[in-house]
Amino acid sequence: MSKPSRAAVVATVLSAALLAVTANTVSYAAGGKSVLLGKTNKSASTTTLKSTSTKPPLKLVGPGVPMKVGNSKRIDKLNADKLDGFDASDLSPTTLVDTVGAPGDPAPEYSSAETTYALTPGLYRVDLNFVLEGSTAGDPYCYVFPTDQVLVSSDYSNILGTSSTQTFFPVSISGVVEVPEGDSLTFGCEGSSGYTMHSAGRFAVEPVASIGAIAPASIRADQSSGRPIAR
Image 1 (cartoon, rainbow, N blue to C red):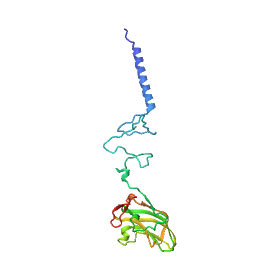
Image 2: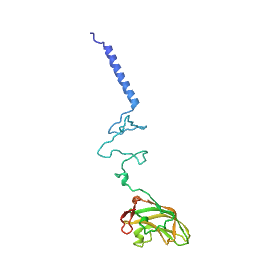
Image 3: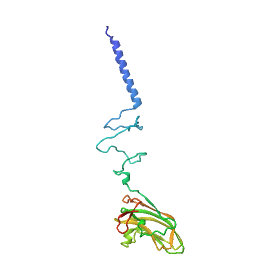
Image 4: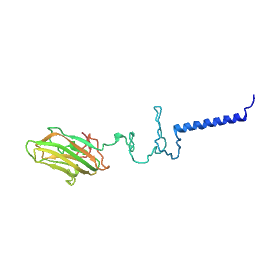
């Protein structure tokens, strides 16, 4: 068997090299540059990882923080299991909205546990709206205030209220109330024995600052002890 000529060997090597270059070029054109681990990778276009199975296209594993972002912009459709280590069930709602009475009910009294709400200390924006009607004109007063600060300490510096001498009395109270440490929030009326609810009302409470937190709507504070009680 004769040995291949030098020309044939050169031609074969050149052909193999050409195929390798062509293959690398196709790979580069189809997939782009490889991601370099431990390096800064830059691209003018979006990099997409697409899984062809039901498995996640990306898994980040490490003893420290698994991922960081470069700014505080919102990420659409990001579904996180926890927020700062808290599960959704651990977080109190940021706004409480409660129904006040029903048509024909007596005017709400601030001595009732039904109108007392357990809150953490802080500033709260409150909105109380309902309508009273009486058979004869009276002089009802309706308020929103920190329970113990007013009823125990007789400190009226932090109270919202309204009054009327009309038989048809639309109650609308809005403003900011500061709830001290260990206190709760109460609303209700006095001098309204001849008045009833014309329609169901609405009471809304929202923290003004992050230091405020709403207890679940099914919890009220016992006015005498401040302990949460079931509604």
